[in-house]
Amino acid sequence: MALRHDQGIVLRGYPFGEADRVVVLLSPNHGKLRAVAKGIRKTKSRFGGRLEPFTHVDLLLYEGRNLDTITQVSVVEPFPHLRLDLDRVVAAGTMVEAIDAVAQEGEASHRLFLLLQRGLRALEAGPAQADLVSAFLLKLAEVLGLAPALVACAECGSTSDIHRFSLASGGVVCTRCSPDRGVKLRDGLTDYLAALASADLGKLPPDSSEFSGEAMGITRRFVEYHLERRLESLSVFDG
Image 1 (cartoon, rainbow, N blue to C red):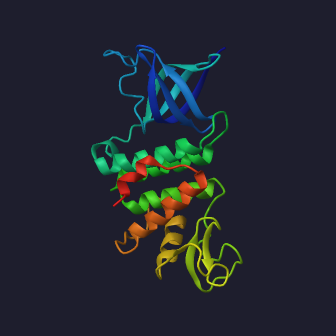
Image 2: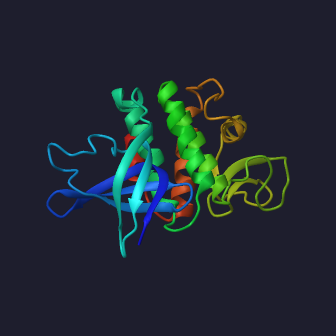
């Protein structure tokens, strides 16, 4: 057992014993990381608020048999403005929940870490548009090797008569391959989804009330279908 440095973005935490808390982080080097913060639930905890969700931190850890123990922590990025707006907090919660669902313990997660970092930075800099969440989830699907087909039919590769989106097929499908299967798409929605998937999270296309809701619906259903789980934080976008 020894001391080691690491860094990560706090995903969540849960009580451990009377005064401790297990903090779950996403580390670029070790994937999902669980570590004990001793005494953090006491009023005069030496960790203060440095291990709250969404915080990017630098850590000194004492390696244990089952769980590492956090001995020192310093904040790299606190994302303070994000926390002052409920919509941004909800959007950040969606990003964190999705990352938590796919990150693995003990596996390097550089791309996941950078994606979450970019998502939180975009929320810190501006409003929580539904399109930002949709773009984040589409990029997450790409990192996982599940990117939906948005330019050509997922079954035959045709770029004509693409009017439906099939969750099982993995994206848009043409009329010839799937005349009745999948969700029928309005003209322009496929192009809108493709623009979100390729855009920088900090420089999204202008928000479109015409397509934003439908884009979120398609993206949500696609991600939940392929993850085989419901993302509870996305329930705020219902209705």
